[in-house]
Length: 173
Figure 1 (cartoon, rainbow, N blue to C red):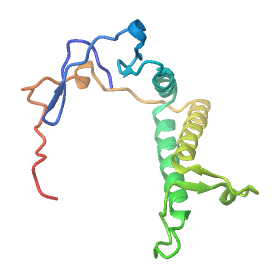
Figure 2 (figure 1 turned 30 degrees about the horizontal axis):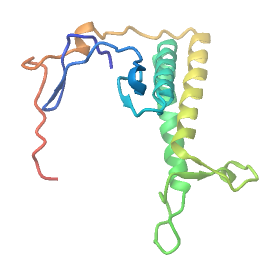
Figure 3 (figure 1 turned 180 degrees about the horizontal axis):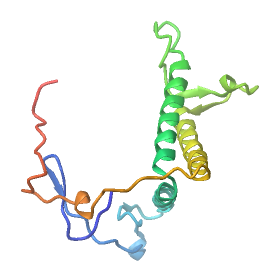
């Protein structure tokens, strides 16, 4: 999401005004990560810094990729993730044959191991790989990417803007 200081971002009934980026503060033994979260003395902001680095890398990757490649990667990652979740059996006695968890057995990929991996991680890897390969194929085939019709105003909305609709979160489900 594109957040610039001074612009309101409205999400349902909650309004948030982004704050300017704060530098790392190491006074009095406490730490602030680049995300502005406070850490206990002796704690580490390394996790937050890694998250920011990964988000930045994925953002740059998405700018490199063609829209068709991103769409193909999204579909492939979603399909792979759903297939992996489908193959995970439920606990014995639960009566569930499928969707029993998120730990995908690597033996299902033909590897001789009892190790498991988080299915969402493998889905993400499939997504990124297909998006990169799809982008290369679409560029090699000289298929036009199309025009981006998104305008700067599409990213911002203030309270009272006629394009912003209030979300009714009081309904019964």
